[in-house]
Amino acid sequence: MEPISDDEIRQAYSATYNKRWMMDKTVILGTRDGVKLIAEYPCSDLCPDSTTRIIHYDIEPGPECTKIGGTSRMEAVPISVAVAVRPFCEPNITNSKNDLGN
Image 1 (spheres, rainbow, N blue to C red):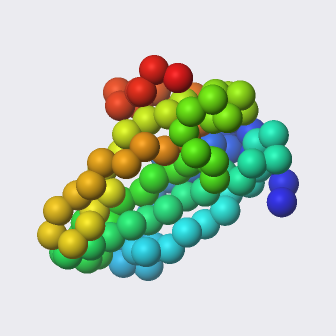
Image 2 (tube, one colour):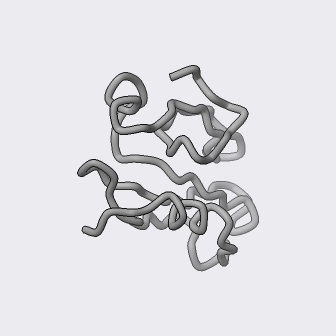
């Protein structure tokens, strides 16, 4: 797996995607410090309209996340007819308002 640059991560965040085609898929985008960067496309209930994209490292939020230059953030994940808020380790370049302070 190839390392991924900040520019490539920004491109992944800004790229459009087909909600029907991507729903419930997981794509490995590359690695950072040996940790996989993943794009997940969860959907539930009103699919494919409620498909969302969450780009995150394949590592738990917290100290290990901070060590690789990530930030722990909360994201809404569609589940059944609702959403659940879950923490993810995301690249720092995302500037999310859901920052957990890591």
